[in-house]
Length: 379
Image (cartoon, helix red, strand yellow):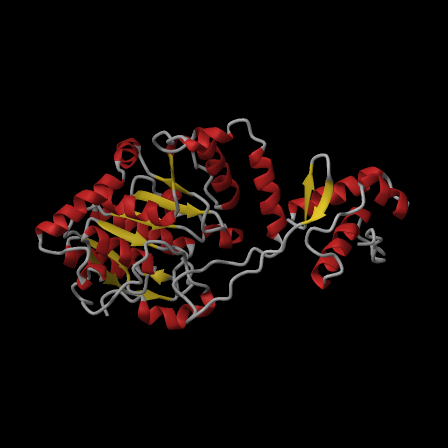
C-alpha cells in the first residue's frame, strides 16, 4: 500500500488534533485498512512541514484512542477494528449504561497510565479490609469534589465491587432475615433483588414531587416496625430530586424513630450544581450507608458508613453473611432453584419477579414512566 499522505482539514484545531481527526476519518472510510503501516513520525513531520513533537503527540493520542498500535522496532500500524455485537431481543430497561462517547479517549489514556503504575501487580492480590488505601483516598477526594460531600474521609470509606454489592452489604449488616425495610413505593430494581436474596420484607412508602415524604416514612416505620429505610435522594426510576428542606425533614424522622437510613446517592453528582448535600453529610449519626458510584458500571463504588461502631460492623461484613442468609432461607424451605427464589420477597407483591441478576444501575429518566410500574414496591 502507498504510504499515507494525509491532507489535514483546515480548521482552528491544533495540528496534532487535525492529524488524529484525519487518521480517524481515513480508518472509518476504509482508506486505511487494519494493519496498514503508517509513516514514521519523522517522515510524516517532514511531509506535513510540522515539528516532530506535533506528530509524536498525534500518534500518542491516536494510540490512546485505539486507532493505531505501536510496535517497538517495527513502527505504527492501524489497529484492528472491533465490531460491536448487535443487541438481540428486547431492550433491557433495568440497566442504565451510558455511552462512553468522547470519554473513550480519556478511558484509554487512564488504562495506559494504570498499566505504567508500579503497584499494578498489587491488584492481583486480595484487597485489605475496606479496600486499598489509594482507592479510598481517591474516592474521598472525588466525593468532596463532585458530590457536595465535604466531610468525606478516606478512613470512613469502604470500596466495593459496584454499588449493588454496597447495597447488599449494608442491608445484610443492619437487618436480619424477615426484617422490614422501608423503601419508596417505586424504587431501584436492584433493591428488590437484594431484599429477596437476604429474605427481607420491603414496605412501600408514598412519594410526591420530591420523592419520599417524611409523613410516609414516619407512617411506614410505625406500622411495620422497620429499623432501616432505603432512600434515594435522586429518585430512581422517577428522577425526582429531594430539596434541602425535604432532606432535613427525612433525617429528623429517622432520628426520632431510631431508623437507620441506607442512602443510595448514586446519581448525586449528576445534580451537584444544585448544592444539595447527601443525607450522610447532614446526619452521619442517622445514615448507615451512602453509596456512590463512578459513571461506568465496572467502576468500584465508594461507600461511606457513619460512626465508628457502624464502620467496624460494615468492614467486618462480607459475602459469607449472604451465605448465612441462604442457609436461613433453606431452613424455611426455600431453595434457590425454586421459581419463588427469584421473587422480590415482598409479601404484598407475590407475583413480582426479578431479572435474576444482581447487577445494574439506574434507568434513564426518560424511561421513568414505564419503569415505575414494574419496580413499584407492594403493588
